[in-house]
Image (cartoon, rainbow, N blue to C red; front, side, top):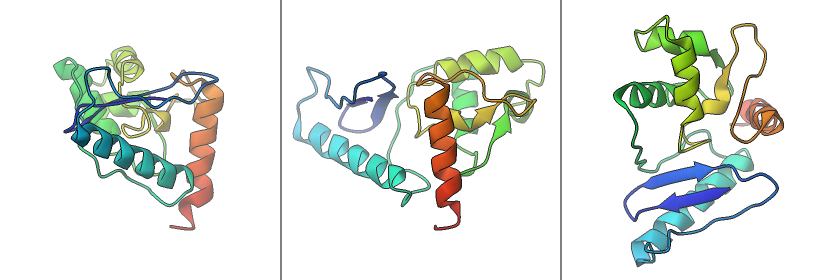
Length: 150
């Protein structure tokens, strides 16, 4: 995973297949960056161990008004549940914008924390995911496994 912070907020949690990387931007070496990156990594570790359902970190996104609306709605999806792309479109008041919702989800800069893995096709099948469908399956199974323990 590629993790980027700016001292005040998490900016990127992105998938890099076959590698695990955590890094600061080259110009982001201030102590507050290190503290925030450590906290992000600690909360991700708790999530992957099944001890965390939500994240307590400031996020910084930079998208269109539509993308921001989609990303905001994604953050309302409860742990270990899924919704369809069409449901997200309906929730943001744009019921015919299903493909645009898919594109906004594709552009999500902060995976896992903005849980795009919880969005599936209307037919119940898994659809595209930046980390690949195996990663999406893994995250959904992880959340389902730990639901009864939290």
